[in-house]
Length: 256
Image 1 (cartoon, rainbow, N blue to C red):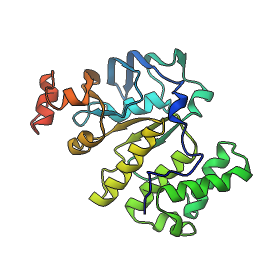
Image 2: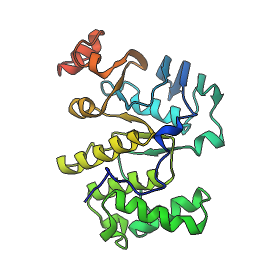
Image 3: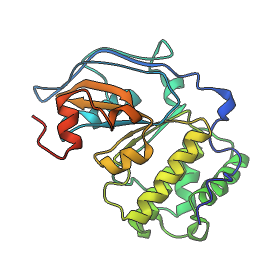
Image 4: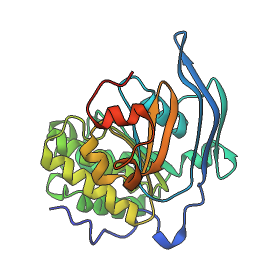
C-alpha cells in the first residue's frame, strides 16, 4: 500500500530547504516545428512551490511548453530562465520528468530505478537505499524482481514516478501522467504528487482532466494558441475564469 504520509528518507528535498531554481521565467518564447508556430511569444513567470497545473484545449501547446521548460527541446527564440540562469547541465540534473506513456527498460522493476540512479552518477552504495525507498513509496516492493514491462498500466506509471522521485529532483514535470489509468491508479499517482509537493518538490503537471486539476492545482496556467491567456490561483480560476477560452473549456464547450 502507498504510505505517502511517512516517505522514506532521501526522496525529495526538504521543505525547509526552499527551491533555488525558482523563479522560472519565460519571455517572448517561440517554438516552431514543421512550419507551424506552436508556441507564440509566450510570457510566464512561476515563482511558487505550489502545484502548478497547465491546462488548455488540444493543440494549445501544453506538452511542447513542458518540454521547453525541461530543456528537452530548444526554443526557436525567446528566453527560459531558472533563477535568472539559462538551462544548463547542472540545472537539468536537478529536474525530472514523467511522460504520459511509461518509458521502461527491459529489466526488473528495481533495476529500472537502479539504472536511472547510475546514469545520474549516484554511488552504488546509496543506490540500493534509494531503490528500496522509491519502491516502498510507490507500493511496489513486492514487484521489485518482476519485469517492469509486464506490470499493469497503473503500476508502470507508479514505477516511472518512483524512478523520477529517486533522483531527488527539485522540480518534477509530468505530462498527462494519468491519461489512460483507472480511477484507483489515478488517485495513487495524485497522492504521490501531493506528498512530493509537501516535501518541497516543485510540481508542474499538464492535464486535460478538469477534475484532476481541481484536486491537484494550487496555481493554474491556461494555454491557448501557444500563449498563456490566464494565470491565476486555482481557487480563483475554477470559480471565476477571466478569459472566454477558459470559461468555455471549464464548461465543456468548444474553445475557438
